[in-house]
Amino acid sequence: MGTVVGSFWKGISYIRALAPNIANPRTPGQVNQRNKFTAVIAFLQPIQAFVNVGYKAFADGKSAMNAAMSYIVKNAMTGTAPDFTVDYPNALVSRGKLTGVETSGASVSTGTLTVTWDDNTEEGSASSTDKALVLIYNSARNEAKIVLESGAVRADGTLDVILPGHFVGDTVEVYLSFQTEDNSIVSNSKHVDSILVS
Image 1 (spheres, one colour):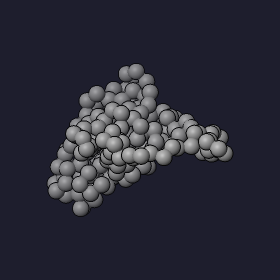
Image 2: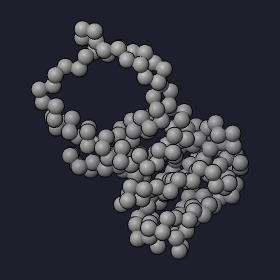
Image 3: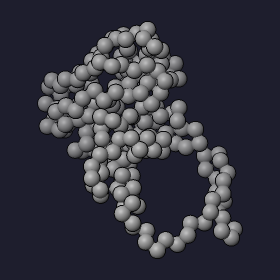
């Protein structure tokens, strides 16, 4: 109506100003922002199932994917304009108030990736029964191995993940986070390592 547009999204009714015609829609700033969005979308698409769990606390009025995109664009980008990429060690693939871990590691042997961590049960809000969540992202193939229900808990201190055979020869990004036994709270993810699959 006139200069405003009404819409409805995720149960929210709202109005916004009608977008003006933009004489130059490809200013350097706009191009840089679009390139950042493109890089982050490419990263998030294959890990959506993990993000839906890891960012559910921030999906209030927006999707978990949008919440993750907003965080990563602001806090985990690297590169020089116009070539931006995700800064994997600083990208949080889950965010929450549950206590995470400080010390962790990863190793690979004959297609099996082993993630280890120090059992810090009783530190902060950590519990021995917190479920271990693991994400293994292959940037070369833009694919991921997602482990949300392995049966491994914080007290175990280790989890073996069998990788797809075609990951051999690629470097993968390994992330670890935890979720309470009742699935209500997650921890911030920890980037465990960038590791070559052998």
